[in-house]
Image (cartoon, rainbow, N blue to C red):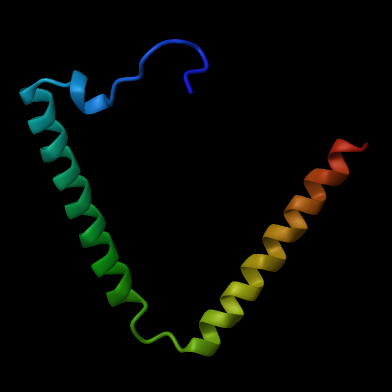
Length: 77
């Protein structure tokens, strides 16, 4: 069913060969940086115990929740 009467084209139909090549290189670089960052973070946090992770998660949730409650209180003042 066409709601507005125009035909939609996919984004790949409108890109040239050079644009597709550039997009592929850019995606490759982004994935490379993402992989290096993930490897670094895994190396840094290798010795952290599951109990420590749970405590950090609980602290983060409590702090984020307190901040959101603060923002809500500011809206109603």
